[in-house]
Image (cartoon, rainbow, N blue to C red):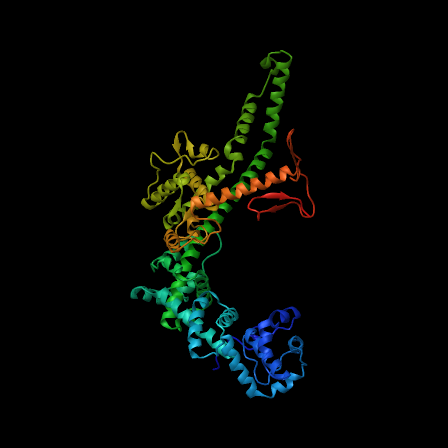
Length: 576
């Protein structure tokens, strides 16, 4: 079976073929004064034209003008015009291959160019191998290789050789990646990784396929199924730090490959590649399952809140409709009392015979209408606590929640709730964190001086959801809800960079140097403003014996103001 081509001559044509645009021709095929002197040493128009074209082809595209190859007409005319010879002179030169080879050897010696050989092949493969770890596209890697050959003044080999370089570099990069990912993994863990490709005893699918096909619909049962998969991945006990041992782009590419490849195909791979791919899949699955469980928790709690809102709204509307008669009785009675009071009449005497039983019933119904549970969704949400009980214990024990000082009360509350589910206790401890309980939740959480467990749990879980969204609480092992510090350079890496040399920053890393530089810029800016003020050229500003007058800012169209940073200060100039 023929090997699949990574690159073709047509794909590499932009690197091998000379330019055809006028601007590019002028850029790459213009002879310098030194070039003209060198070309002038040749005898005859054909030799000068052929020599000049050989010289220019060496520089760009960086290869030899082959025997029998005729440059494009535009290039031929452009070069011939510079040395004042007719383009037809090249026809004679093309028939003199011995002269062409002699000129080629002379130019290589004069300009320091070398022909591509085995030593160059090994050297350029070694150069391209680290690049191949991050450059997945063969054409992109080939472009990097060709640019490096030009920089080293090595004449480009045939396109098939470039393809071989790319193939070898990719293979070596892949082997190095696999070796790094599998280095130090104990044999029993490798066996556990291979077991992912075996079929589950109760199902026809493999363990890997089961892990990949996680439930999507937000429901308590779905969260439990996600946690079951997460527990299975965690039993592999692979250090997530292995992902940082290789470039992130390489890890992502390998993880995507692990998702695409079928378990049957994975089983046919070489041992090192198979183990590396499975290790990558396990690390990525632990991240993705963690994020999936947290996201599903967010969606499930959100759907519970929405259902509680809808139920509360519908119940309030239904209650108002049912109480129309009672409210009418109540308002009529109140109106009689108001009128009697306005006329100075004894209210009870004015009422006379009155259905006090009906009046009391109307008041009782009105009290129902103004109860918090009638108009507040929180009461309805607490009624759905049984849904939360199905997954809360396992969910809270599955993750390590972290956060700064302001959320410590929430974290302590979550730990207490998780312990209740773990131990089977039904009552909260006598003292629990309450500072995180908002004013809206407090009447439901604390009733008659006692903390209600259902309300307390839902309040804590609601706070967890909000804080996860805000980034105030993060989760170990999560990619979506990770600590902000994980985006920064690790302290050890930062210390190594400082020891190695100046930090790659756009400002001075030392405090004294930074303040000194800023002070110099400020002094220059003040000096410039002073000069402009003395000359009366400050825009929109007048400074004289009467004081400082600054014109109000106006909307400026077509350009606005220009801030000049180049002078060391920031000076407002008029737009042209």
